[in-house]
Image (tube, rainbow, N blue to C red; front, side, top):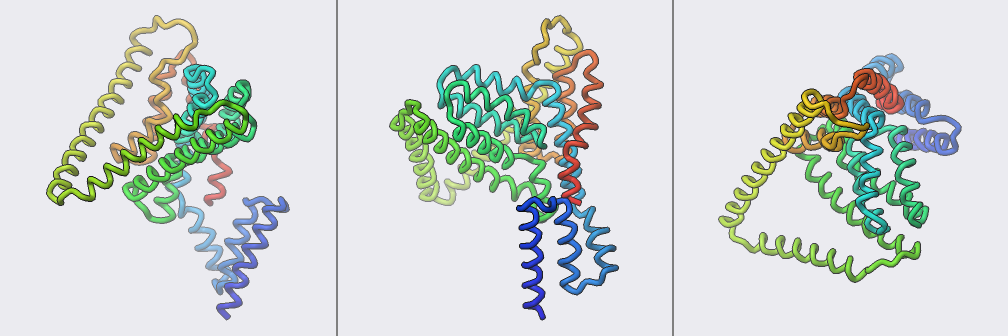
Length: 347
């Protein structure tokens, strides 16, 4: 009997996947059907399926989709105020006409943005800015799309809104997720840079593989030497070194905290006490808005929603102009609407 149930579980899953893949039904329909059929095959009474699987199940991921809603609000605010768009354009200007440098900077810019941005609107907005910039200097379409997708994925690794799903579903803590995410971030960056280097060479651009390889080799050798020396040190020296590093980490954390306070005070002064600024440019502290929630969570263990609320307030203050309050309210409402398909999937 159990073997038959397992086979039926797999059959239901494969049928739903095939229907979604062939675009016969959307995931929004396939998931509830599976949520009903799988416990039914397992012998769960229909009343209990309706009461517990559907009724109670819809709120099991309440933390995750609440964080997703707040993250989407910040995402829409960054788009409406032009912070995200200008962030990318400044990066392209700094890179000059060096294809490798532009591609690498675009990768970093996309990753930085998608630590906060989310939703189809953000993907379209960033794509419409990034793709023409890279295409205009002769970077091939495969390279351009690859850089965009790598940046999107790398940003997703450090997107704290995504971490909320792991906390809810897997019962993990931020302290468990953080080291794994940072390791994956480093590996993904290395793979992405390797990809764009090879692809630019295939596009016909002159790439100094020896120079790039030498720099990467030096970095890897230094890391390997440090690791080797640490393993050879006595336990007493290792404990002292660990203490020094922990104290250094505390100093860095306090410096970053002081920097955040400085940015907030500077923003308040500039926007409300020194209104002589001309033009429609964005005040430079606003460009820290995408990474502010990430810093608050990583360094100060702030809760997800609180961090996004701080990001929203700072984003509003740093881009404040007359009539901007209406845009802020619109961002809040639209942010909820943009992420609603994902929220319904969570349900």
